[in-house]
Length: 192
Image (cartoon, rainbow, N blue to C red; front, top):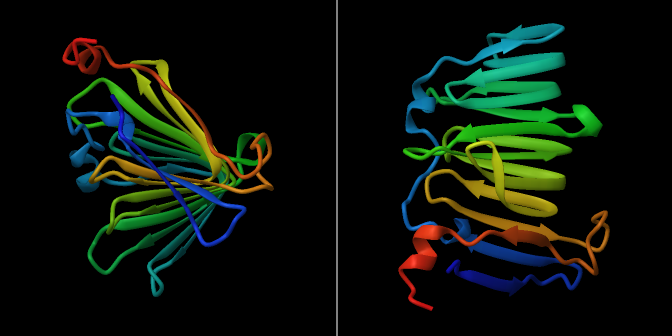
């Protein structure tokens, strides 16, 4: 059974939900091999600033890095001093950028959309900000889904936090929303 921890922040309009990624005992995180893969992109235009280690891609941007896929209207990719890459994606279909990545060792993917998606290669985290939605796909079927104003997903630990606010379209009084599907491996071991 998933463990869910509810916390109230100092702001009454926010509710933060910290979830141990749908209670997954298998510790299937993002594909570790993705970190060492080259970043491949296609876009209508690209600006490369070698001095700042910054690439600005615009217009129908699609990026792949191993199993990771990002689609947006604009993506800024920065080479970190550690050698990893970080990116900020904005705009896209319906005004939202898109992110997808395979989970290690299982036929599952994490995917999501938001007005702004920030991937930090050093910490291996993804921040979905503004009308955020994140799903766990089992094969090609959506198994779990959460939504709120912002979602922070830690690829290393499989933990995510969802924050809602009164201004979130579809949210009720600052609440986050979600569907968590029972997993056969968890239900069988509980004997209930």
